[in-house]
Image 1: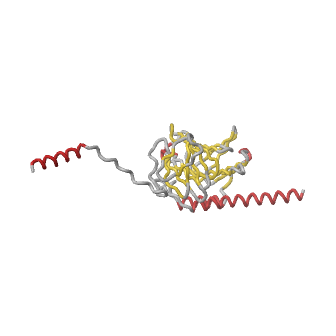
Image 2 (image 1 turned 120 degrees about the vertical axis):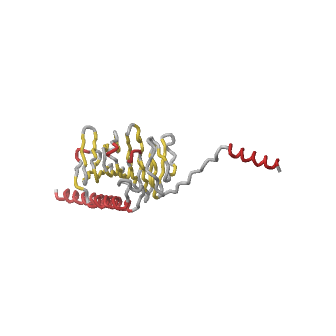
Image 3 (image 1 turned 180 degrees about the vertical axis):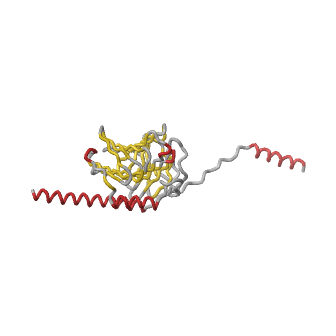
Length: 264
């Protein structure tokens, strides 16, 4: 019996000395919102609806699925499919919402409190926490560059029509192309055609734009203090209404132009 007791004691001592087993993290379910970003140089995929993908500069031809909780590094890109959306939580509490059928290049995230993105096509919304004072927060498009100091805004890029649309809910966004610069304040929007910023008119938001912002404020709360980082498909419906409004505007302008030519 004494030998048996010694054997048990030896086993207990060995177990106590063994290194602890690694703890496997709980799997992150796509569509389940995550806490705000804690990384200082990466974005966190806070929520996903539908299909979202990413690629890196090292593998530009390989797109990989994005799930909630994934970290997105600088020098990469993300894209969404139709009826899909992706919410990115950035360092310092900034947020980028990526709508359906959108491609966004992520260039700089948090380095020296600087943020820069490239909107290739589609629509994004962004909340920039002015209290955190980013040294730079820019959205580049082939037409113009948007400079933001602290605001809630949306930008859309129609790559086929070479058209960029910007609307501001709070704060101010400055658009620039070369030496030309224009400011868009709260409740206003502008549309830049073929890169001609000098001809762009800053005006009151259209009814469809106002309705979109109303939906963003009621259906989602990522732009509110300590708001939940969760997406709602109602916002995509509002963005589609904006596109339909723009198509009607173009059709109306085309009919008016045709009447003018016949009259001349």
